[in-house]
Amino acid sequence: MRRSRRTRGVLAVLLALVAGCASPRAGPPSGGGTSGVKVTVTTRSLPDVGTVLVTGKGYALYMFAPDRRRAVTCTGVCAGTWPPLMLPSGATLAAGPGIKTSLLGSDPAPGGGRVVTYGGWPLYTYTGDVDPGQATGQAIDLNGGEWYVLRPSGAPLEAGP
Amino acid sequence: MTAPRAASPRTCPGRRAVLLGGGLAAGAAGASAVWALTGPSAAAPVPAPPGIPPDDDLMREHGVLKRVLLCYREMTRRIQVGDQVAAPDLHDAALIIHDYIEGFHEGLEEGYVFPRLRRDPAVAGTVTTLLVQHARGRVLTQFILARTTARDVASPGTRARLAEAMQAFVRMYEPHEAREDTVIFPAFRQAVPAAELASLGQHFADLERQQFGRDEFGAMVARIARIEQDLDIYDLDQFTPQVGPFSPSA
Image (cartoon, each protein chain N blue to C red):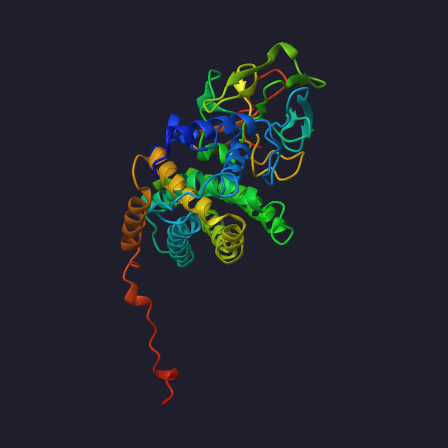
């Protein structure tokens, strides 16, 4: 289907707007919030993997090896399975216990908005983690590369569970 | 020796894809919200483009999955009776699951279908189970892919574990896809306005071309047909039963 430039423009604006909306998906939120909202990255000890990075709600955060600490490369269908942790416009980053503030940052997302990073790694959640405190995506090879949870040091846990 | 592994391209949509709601800005949340906001209530009616409705598209991908399950079942049977199974065929069957079903089809479900149903109390619990099953299936597939070298397939211990993994996969995915076809996709069709469904069908087709560079469905059907031929289960006629003992005149 062909779309007019105007329609594309409207969609681009909508994308930017909804980047901060609460996630409607069944799994963990992909960030959430608007101006004045904090996006929290914290740590938690999870079964089989030990202490790793999690969202403020306790969902495990993953890095994607092909990102190479440089850019968000999981897009399109990939992001359906691994929603990036978005930093909505106007939101601020908050570091929970165990997090090194100096490692927190954000990268531009190809579709607009920003994705939270840690030690340069863009951070993603996993749809397979349907409850907080899980890390079912650890060491999974999917969508063109491997996925690992991250230690508070910023190092990926590259050994399987 | 490790069996050859085909490329498993990740999706890197172009600008147009992102503008069409391809998912990136806010991952699943953004894509779903965009589609929700661009339905008929938010814009003038959009003429339905030619193409396959998204639920039909997902169901024909289920057809590929069903044929891999048929191959897994035959390979499991062969292992259990002590027959040979060609490592490249088993590896390629698992690779179809990995690249096309888990790396693409399930991403569409997770990014576009399930989010629309999360607040429907009639199916929300089922959606959660389906997500868990996707994750478990990926673990089984990773196991199968890692153990389909010629050496592994010759080892009795590994053959037994491969058969166990394939059995678990088949047992889970037969009811999984049947539930999606008969409950989830109809609920999705009911939840999404017709014009939006039509646009989404085209969008799925665009995503497939972006990820694989072509209409991958046809390529996958050809690959699975070749494996079926190797396993002597390709000819459909062999599955037609003799019904003499059941005929009215018997």
